[in-house]
Amino acid sequence: MFGRAERKAMALVDRALQAPEYQERIAGPAQDEEFVLSHADNVEAAGFVSHLKLPHYVDFQAELELLQRLRQQHQEQNNE
Image 1 (cartoon, one colour):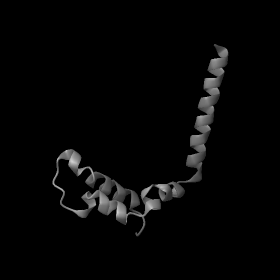
Image 2 (tube, helix red, strand yellow):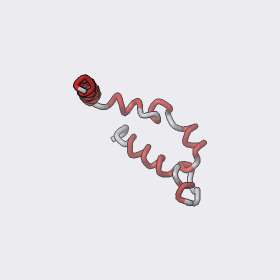
Image 3 (spheres, one colour):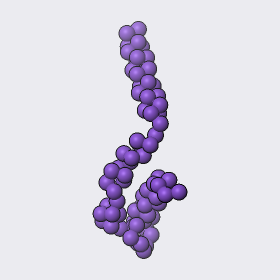
Image 4 (cartoon, one colour):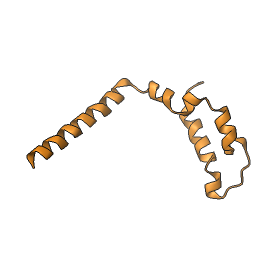
């Protein structure tokens, strides 16, 4: 299905851009940083669209865990 492989595509591009780190021969346009950056949709490439596709409870759960951790740290500081 169209539009279901963004993460896979970005992972492949990310790996392709690591070619110099692995002393690999640069053989394709996906290994050229300038080419990739000029052809990538900035919003999609930044991961913002993937963030919007996550269920809202994921964000809520992360914020809830942060608040619980801060509350616990505050209580520990007050007990000392």
